[in-house]
Image (cartoon, rainbow, N blue to C red; front, top):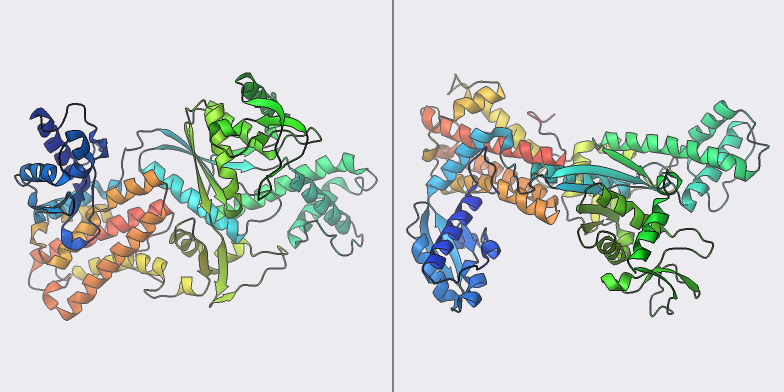
Length: 597
C-alpha cells in the first residue's frame, strides 16, 4: 500500500509497473486468469553491475503459465522496455529480469524527499493493524543490567519502526512479580531493613541478592515501619516487604529505561492474573479444557535433554503436541501452584482479548527453548487467529579496549545499564546495540563507541548529519539567500535543478537515498530494526566518500564558487541526505546533531 500523501518510492513504482505488465499478459492469455501476483517482487540486485532493480516475476509465474522462465521473462521484458522510466532490461540466469532505470527516476526521488520532509520513508503497509510489542520485562529484583539493555533498545526501536511503517503499536512491559524470585527479593530486602535498624547482618547468605541497591529499600522500610516488622513471622512481613521492594525496583527500572528514552504504554502485573477480580489463569485453563486441549495424564520420561518441569506423576497437561510442540506441557506443579507456562498462556490470552492478533515478544538468549510451546499455546487460545513472533536477543560482552569490564559493587555481580549510559551516552548505546543482528552475540567496547572515527558507526552516521549542516553554513557565501531555518531551506531547495546531478557517484548517492522507504518496509515486515542501522551507515559512508572525492576533483565539490545552480542542486542532494539520516536515526531513537562536539 502506498501513502497517498506522497508519490510511490521507486521500488513500489516499478513493482506496480511490473504488475501492470503481468496483468496485460493475463488479458492476452499468456498468463492464466487468477494467477497470484503477490509473489512478484522488485528488489535491489545482489550485484550492482546488474542494474538498479531485479524482478523474479518470470521465475515465480512460469510454472502456472506452463512456460520456461526465460521465455516468460522475455515476454515481460519486451513490454518493460517500452516503459518511460526504464533505460534497459536484461534477462539473467534462469529468468531473472534486471532493470536499469533512467536518471530521471533518481532526480525525481530526490524531489520526493524534499517534498515529503520528515514523512519520507513513512509507509502504510501496516494498515493501522494493532501490534503488541512486549520487551524488557526484566524481573523486578534489581537494576537493569547490560543484557537487559540490548533487549530494551531492540524492542523500543522495533516498536518505533512498526509505527513508522503504519502499524498501531502498543509497547508493553510484563512485570514478573508472582514467582519465587520476588520472595527471594523480599527476604533480601528484609535483611537490609534489619541493617538499616542497626543490626549486624553479617555476610549476605547464599541465594539472596547481595547488591547494595537494596539498601535504600531497607532504609525506606525502616523509616515507614520502624522496628515493628522485627517481631513478626515471615508470612506476615513478607507480603508487605515484597510489595515495597517491587515498587522501588520498578521505579528504578523506569528510571533506567528513561535514561535510554524508553517508555512503555502498559505495565502488566503477572500477579494481577491471579489476584484480580477474575483468576485469569484458572479461566484460561478451563477454556482450553473445554476445547479438549487440557487433560490429566503422565508425561513419558524425557529423551536426551530433560524436559522442563518433568515429574513422573499424573498431572494437568496442555496438549501442546497438537499445535506443533515436541511434548505436552504441565500447567500445575506438584504443590498445586501454576507453572510459569500456565501464567504465560493466560497473559497472552489477555493480549488477544484486548484486540491484538499480531504479537511480538523480545526474549533473552536463554529462552530459545520456550518458543515452540508458547507459539503452540497462542494457536490454541486464539484458535489460530493470532500470531506470535519471538525475537531472541543474544548476549552482550562488555569490554573496554578489548578487555572485559569488571562488575560494580552496587549491583553485586553485573554491570548496570545506568553505568554504561552515564559513561558513553544514550546515542552510543542505542545505535551500537542495533548495529548487529539481534540473534548474534554483541561485543560492546566502551572505549571504541566514543571514538571519533569511521570505525565507530554511531559517530560516523551522526557526523554525516553534522557535515551536511556544515555544508549549508559554508554554502551561504555562494548562495547567500539560502535560508537558515530548516523548513524554509527545504522549500527553497525544491526549485533546484537536480537533473544536473549526473556524475555516477552522485547518482549512486541518489539511489541510496531512494532505497530508504523500501528498507523501512522490509525491516518492519521482518521485525529487524538493525537493517535501518546498516542502511544509515552505508548512506553516511557514501556521503562522506563523495565529500572526500570533491577534495581531489574540484568540479565535484558541493560548493562551486562560479556556478550557483549546480551548488543549489548539490545542496538539495545534501538536504536529502540530512533528511533521511535524521529520519532513520529518529526511528532508532538516536539524535541527529547539527554539530559534533
